[in-house]
Length: 387
Ligand SMILES: [Fe+2]
Image 1 (cartoon, rainbow, N blue to C red):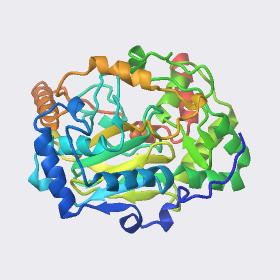
Image 2: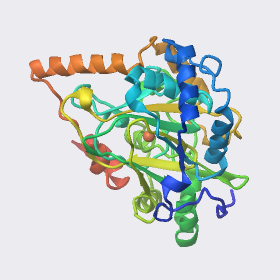
Image 3: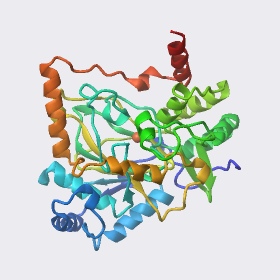
């Protein structure tokens, strides 16, 4: 594939962008009223039952379709701000969020247990072996699975301090590497083997290890598409024994180094009620470290949607790892109403209290700082094998 410079607005640098003026949509009163009316139509429906018909937005539709275009062919980032969070319960906010989401895409399951709406909250002291979105601390830059076109967050509750969403344009990094390190960029176009999370794989229909290298970057019609899930890359090394060449390590590390430099990333601070939509094909995300409260009911709590947009050009087959068939299969494990924040927080609070009584709260390990270089993945694997 020819490595061409991306000449569109998708190639922005964080240091040159003001998201408040260039990426933000502020809710106006009429929109809030329309959403409020839609919530009444929606009623107490389960998350899976929320559709464009059961959450009707007759006049806001045009705005949402403009925002959807902005995600595909603009900066790839939209922040919706100014929704009156304080007027609604957490469960109402969840339904409103999904109601807006279904007008942009089709929600897909986010893990083997089939949740259509994820809770991004630190429960690593309560639940064993949590994934990145259920652990605190910072994160490496990544793109969520290839089954999702738009990744989105809604802020229900802010952290005590910190916890900004840190995002970066893969197109901008691509353009720089094309000038400075075309040799390493070529490695990214060639890609790496990917491996599913153990439990995800158990309920997926595709094999756990990709048959070929999945390109980190492809481009078609002037648009760049990326797949870079640090977890899936690490599992391939640690669970399937894939070994990376020095060049492959250098390419991954260079991508992370550029993403982490102030010139490129953009920090977006969330206010309660904010909704962020990212093009999950070309915007990488991470987050900054943060301080949280001890009680799980007061902790930073975001809701997450993975949306598929069937109307967008399909991803290239060679870049599909987790597929629509996999996430559809995960839905078999879904239980009705399981995503509602009130239910989720009540469950976590009960578990936390039980662990406290039994003195069995867990001490989580922080994986992002544990692996400053991709080299660390295989070093750890080899150490384990030897010892
Ligand atoms: Fe993510």
